[in-house]
Image (tube, rainbow, N blue to C red; front, side, top):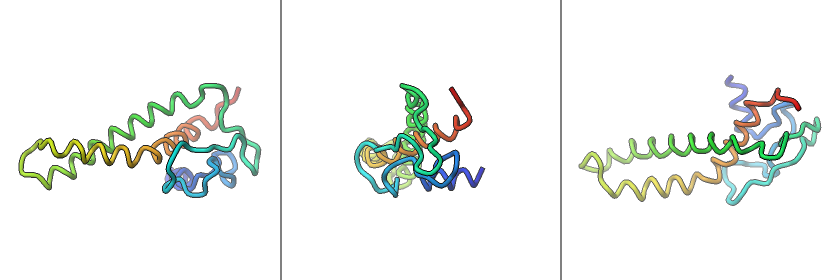
Length: 120
């Protein structure tokens, strides 16, 4: 399990663990929509199995976004006197927008790794 997390964070191919899923070397510091390789450069593993394959990754992205919003609220509430101060909402929005690019990449990687043994 811990090896899979390392490979996901390193953007490694789920099949051979040597090629890269995304064209960018670093998935953490990129802005914009991700550019994926169609096939692994090392083992020719096809990342998008069928049209609409990544629709399920939207649910993973939603879960990541909700978790980040809750974590931001829990951390930010310690800096305000009231339990729910309305000034926390823009802070949560900024964090969610800042993490959106990473969430797209991470959700797609998680989706590929969850269904790496699925074959058509």
